[in-house]
Image (tube, rainbow, N blue to C red; front, top):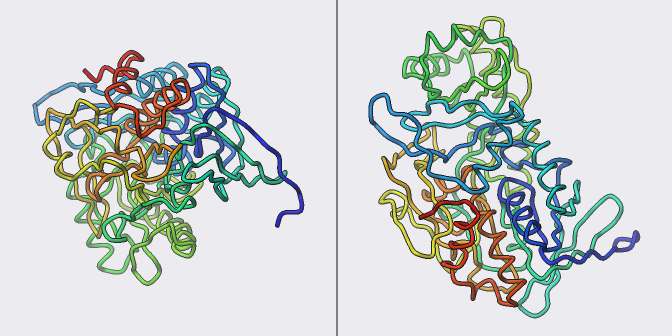
Length: 441
């Protein structure tokens, strides 16, 4: 019992979670005249891209082995609009080589500001520092969500609820079918950090333009780790020059428990251990960089993520499921509402595995965002219905923007036509995002 009493909030669409998918869904629905509320547990939007400091927009460009190839963009719509807004404010770098494709580094402060601006322009009601704590059910329909705030609980009701929590929190609270990774085994989290004081010109001259560090660095990391000089459990690392002078974005930690176990951040003790161990590892990698990498002699650890970066936890069991085979063969379907050229980037064990899809992309069906049971609910973001290896590709930022864009349109169709989300034809959603700049065809 909460003695503070409850306040009622009514909306057409309620979005739980303000990451890339949540922002896109909320803005898209509000632009079409719906009353939209977005709730976010932090005091800013961005999810893993900002709080987790992942720092890059991945998934915009096709992968290729062609020599001297230029980036070929295949993802447009909301993702492209958001990137253009970041770029206009100096908050997005040029495409950087990442193996056989490209990624773009963003400024997390500009990301927050542009999300604020887009939500305000669209007329979305935003509730920060708010956490979904329960669901309101009317039979098998999710009629709303109970939101915990410092003021007291909010009884937030809506015609359509969008679970963009990343962890399928609303799905779980409603008791709807879900699953966790590969029989409970998930990709390990990473504490991403930034280092300043780096001589970027010397660094790039020595190690090349590819942000995946060369094998000679991996060999040195393994040698120093095995000799006990540093604790560096991941040898294949990614270092990105950022939009700021003399700064590197560092994706290199493999956060495991103090007993060496893989961590699942759905478990409160694992989440706690991930934060503590992640910060310890960030210091170790920073020390190694200063001691051994060209251009990093005077560098220092500037910041870590507000929270450890989480790649995979709970996912909805949808009316469709994106399979591993769909990704590697570049599957297409007429009811697909988003495309992805990103490789399978599987973080499990001591070495990340990257499996490329070359000169092609796959499409993600609408049914991957519709729970197999339960009415009035859609999901958006990395908690989509996808197999273990498939989600290692489908979870990245550009695709989450696209999912939110599509699910925002689906919510509009559901509200305006008085139709349950599961009865919406994916081809109708595809037509809506295409008319809104997605270029799926």
